[in-house]
Image (cartoon, rainbow, N blue to C red):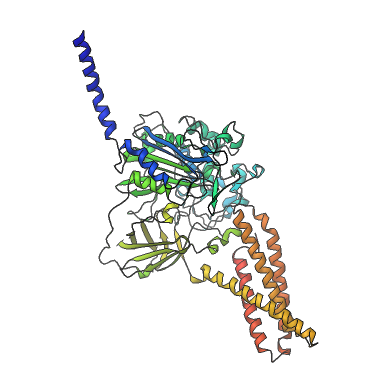
Length: 637
């Protein structure tokens, strides 16, 4: 009996040995042993929590299991409530899009549509407002190449009474303008994803949130996740939901509860534990694990394949995932930001590895999300070398602006509020330098293929932290060799602009108008008092200078007020700006009325050369100012 017992013990130890050895040998794609993940993540997060991020939640999966999850910092500073990855709800922002594209791929698998299906009939009358006649396909929506401008009106609201049904939110009168031909330009589009969500509703007869609940969340046991736009009415959710914060100076300030109208594009409220289940399902290639999204493994493989890229040597879009090369590995990921939360989900299919990070702050750009993925997945250590015979550095010089732009409504002013354009200049090493003044970005590149440049600057930038991929720049040219667009491969292409469209011209117009209006007003009032005192005649030119200066001061004051209101809430309805439009029109009429009086009396005062020169300059500046207001949509909504 003793010998039999000894044999059993030996057999058990031998049987367990391979498993024990396998567990000890597991490591992240970058080579960090699984046993050291907690120590590594703790060290990284220690540098960000409280200083740059109030709270964060991290979940990591590998080989079909959750290998790590932990909360850091506080979900609610006022209540000193810590973050728990299993129960602390946060807003996923645009990570929600991955669920929408997964739903679309489920319907593709079922044969209810294809990636080439024309979605224009789902615009319900809005197709008549499209700029181009080419079909808009499901693939265009997935890759953000449908050509739509960005429209943020009512994207986020703070009063639930301002929430829309999805069909009403996509109504023709709310449809963004189509700026580019389908398939030509990557311009990140919430509207495109919302339209895809509406396609799901139309094909299934189910509300989008209900479809995702029944076909994705429930099968994956994502019990702490919802696309319900009124998440605040779900029992117990608000008790566990993190408070979102923004940092003002050194203080964290709580932000109000917000609701998302762009539901398919950004309405998911979830936990990183639940996102871990979603990652496990997307890494379940053999469908051998507990979590399955599709009936056939081929559908998952297809979804992870590149669907669009501007250049074969660049990352692109894989059926809704953004691609990125991290060291030796191809990463599929998507970031997200709401008014008070940020998130990032990254998977490495070839390594069965994934990481989800969520924080309760608006637009985390300190680098916590990016550093975690860089350390756990890897970074390229090779320095690209320029290819002999390539010399297009001077040909691509210029100023470029994001194709993800607003052309209708008052938010068109955004590129002029900060110098966020990309400036490309040839450098002394024969390559190019990318500079973005607003972000403090300055990156160097070498040309490795015709019009394709690879980054040689090792450090990550704020642009990378914000979700862009700065490793490659590709300049698309026309038949004449002129650059038509700059592509990063992800998020948004950029288009060349002339110096007249630069923010500096706008600054010059507003600054000049302000200076001349204030000088003219002071000079005019002082002159008016002196002439009254000495009982001398006040000329029509003198009166005109005072009147125009007064018009200029009022116009600039109204301009400043509209900028402040936009900054306080960029998502507010355009109707809130009707007062400003009326005010600008009244001031424009006043400007024209004074112009008539000045012209009428111009030849009657022949010797007033100084005041005439002043009036000409002031008039030109005010005319330019009103043209700027027209260009920025401030004279109409």
